[in-house]
Image (cartoon, one colour):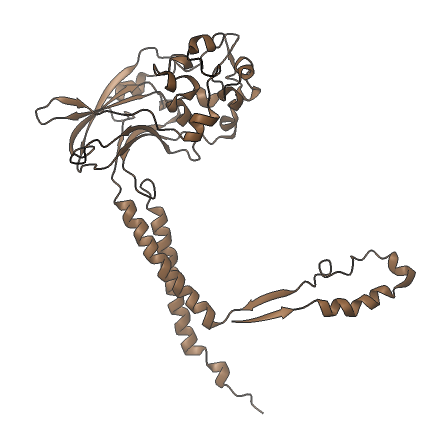
Length: 370
């Protein structure tokens, strides 16, 4: 590789005398100072690209990216994932009546069951997600509709929430806790999983509800007012529940370490999604016996307490079961991107090599005519 360089020191020395001999008129000049920076005479280095440097770069990028992409793609494909839509759009579905009649003002929950079959066993820990479609959590006003000071346990914000929470700031002349549109639209379906034994009986699959939120959210960003006072009924006295909630925030769970603002289902929901189709972690299914799969292949039943209406905004609801790997959940895009970039670079390297071999020596052997 060849490079051209430029040194401004000699030119600065040559022009310093000329700048100094300007006399009185030179002081009135509006020209920038005669420095290398202001006169754009800083030393420069510009690489001159040749076939000997460009072609190896293309081949090296291709040879590195393609194996990495194949590894990422294979790893992603080894992740097992199962997804089932339980919105109830199909009239034959048991959840159809729930989807058609449920509203935010409904007081009686609707319970439906969706049977499904796992064709293969899930060997490692399984993560259960709920997914929503056509729900725009990234809307600017929706994202801003919250009071982080209130969620952090500030007592003054508990009684006087931020104006950003409007129109979900007060209800019945009482401050709402938690306030805002994000909290008001909390996902509240209850999902229960049963395994159908060969004899036809049902076995409840144990679901773990703690450990699904980020550590920083659970221990730093979200705190109950009152500190270590577990009597949340007294702490939240004088506040009102969100408009669309069926129970106040201090009744989200019977476990005092998972109740109020530190309820992990609530914390997970409050971390807004960037796209209108998203999934959020709902429960964990831990592997207890190395000899037995976490979820055996066979028949299962998903029991849904259908509380969350999505028909008004043409949304869809789904449940996802997935394992993970060192690279996270199932996502083949990264592996495909690496393979594509590596293949394009390798192909361009071959094409440019052929062109260089065929036409590269013409200029060297050509003679200038007299």
